[in-house]
Length: 323
Image (tube, rainbow, N blue to C red; front, top):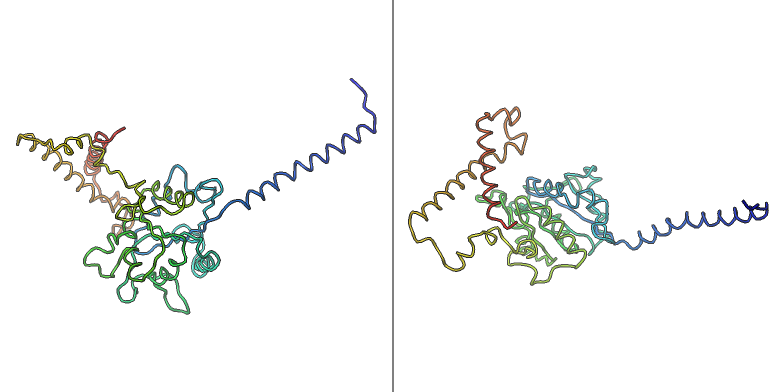
């Protein structure tokens, strides 16, 4: 082993210390540079006349997870910042509404406005309010009139926001409308993208947001007649049916008994789906009954019949989809 003099050791130690100090400072400078390069897009998510089902659906997104969507860069260099969402935010009251006002004032033209639910319009919008101003309720319609014109884009999440949905169904006592009809009446020209569904699929929502951030607003040819992105709504289950070619070629069943067999099969399937529809509310909403838990109102035979019906519907759908 070669000997090292005291002078050589001190020179080596000093050089190493300086190098370590440089290395230690590098991640900080790199982090600051990356932070400056990241574009932040504030999100204001307003819920109007709805059941919050679309919120639940988006929260259940798997790839990416909702944590990744909100805490990480959804696309390298692009960070979503959820400033307001009634269901998931910790703040409430005036503190929560301050986030809406602050985002509107500081980020005009840069924030994305997400609307979930239809907008009540009857009696000056009195049947849907969000917060107060000077001690008076502020209608959901007034919030939309103020926020929509200054948004980069408005995303209508779910069928209710897109077209009115169940809240707008006859007799429509609150005068609910979808965002498109609201914009037409108010003369608002902000770009609008519909993401319908009851609830909307999380992939459609995440994909639409990613498209807007990465590629900008969709071109006219990328949107269908219903305001939906063809990327996610261009293909239906009907088009994937294994019998679709026969329909396109005009080859139909000639014998009555064969057509009757098919008709009987689908009638049975539809009847099964109708029965399953009756179980939609109770298992999903704990307060659907006056008291007790939903399971208290079901017998074992009813539950087994529902599970069997669901399995038959699922297997039928699987058999008619391309794998």
